[in-house]
Amino acid sequence: MSMQILNKTEFSKLSPNQKQTYLTELFQLPQSMQRDLAGPPIVIEGHTFDVSLQLMLQLTTPSDDKHNELGSVAESRAMMEAQSPMLSPPPINDILTDDFKMAVSDGSQITLRRYRHQNAPSDNQPALVFYHGGGYVGGSLNTHDLVCQHLANDGKCTVIAVDYRRAPEYPHPVPVNDGLTAYRYISNHADKFGIDANRLAVGGDSSGGNLAAIVAQQTKSESYAPKLQLLWVPKVDFSHERKSHTLFASGFFLETAKSRWYKQQYLGDGADDTKLLTDPMVSPIYGDLQGVAPAVVMVAGFDPLRDEGIEYADKLKAAGVDTTLHIYHSLPHLFLLFSGVIKDAKAAFEDAVQALRRLYTVKNYS
Image (spheres, rainbow, N blue to C red):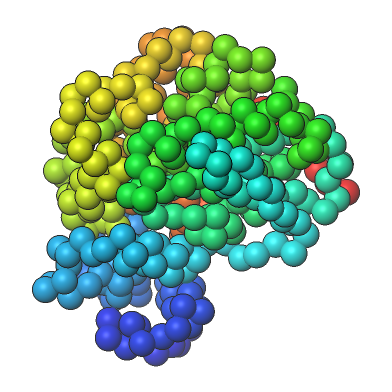
C-alpha cells in the first residue's frame, strides 16, 4: 500500500473528515512500516504503547511551546468534539435515535438520547444508561454518539445517553444529581422508553465512569437497581494521585496536569477540601460497595487513572461484588473512542458488548 505520509503541519491543515480518512489509511499500513514511522517503541513497566496511537500523537500533539498549555473551557470542549470521531466506529443506519427532555433542578431541562435498532421490539428492551466522559467539563451526546450506536447495535439493547450539565457553569453536585435524576426517571418511566426496568445497566467512561459508579451505589437498594455497571477508565478518587499519575503524566492523551485542571473546574473551592474529596458522591472508591451491581472495570495501561481503577475493582471484589477487571496494557485513556480503528480498542469494545449480552441473554435481531 502506498500513500503520502504527512507531517504535523500538513496534517493540521486537513478537515476533520480528511483527518479521519488519513488516519484510517495510515493505520492500515503494515505494523513494521508504522513502527518505522513512529520511531522506537514506548515501553513502560514492560508494556508497549500501541504503535498506531504513537503515530497519531506525533500528528496531533501541539508544538512544544503549546504542549503544556491547558487552554480554556471552550477550547477543551472544541478539541474533544473535533477529535472524538477520528477513530470512532462508523455510523449505523439501522440504529434509530430520538431525544427526550427531562426536568431537573432549578427548573432546567436536560436531554436523554435513546438509541435502538429499527428491528428491535417496541417494548421490554434491556437498556444501558450511558454517561459520557470529558472530565465533567467536556464531552457531550455528540462526542459519544457513534459509540452509543454500536453499543445498542452490538449489545442488542436500548442505550439511553444522558446529557448531564457540565462544569464550570454547573459544578458539583449538579452533574451527579442530574445523572441520578436521569437514572431514576428512566427506571420509573420504562414504558415511555420501551425498556424493561428490571434489566437496566449503567455505564460510562472517565468522568462518566465516575457517575455510573456513583449511580450504582446510590440506587443499589431501590426497586429498579442496576443489574450491571460498565466502567471504562473510571475516575473514582479525587482525593489523591497514585503512581500511574506520575508514570503517565504526559504524552498519552490525558495529561495529569489536565486532570488536575478538570478537578478544579468541577469542584471549585472544594478541590482541596478533604471531607468533600472523600465523599462517595465525589469519589465512589470511598462508598459502601456491598450489594452494588456486578461490575466490569476496563482500565488502560497508559493512563494516569490506571491505578485507581484497579484499586476500585479490587475493593469491589473484596466487598463480594461479582467483578471483572480488564487491563488493556497497550491503550491510553478514553480508548472507548478509538474502537473503530485500533485493534486492541476493538477487542476491548467487544468485551463490554459481551458483558451486556450475557446480562440480557437476548437473541439477535432478525
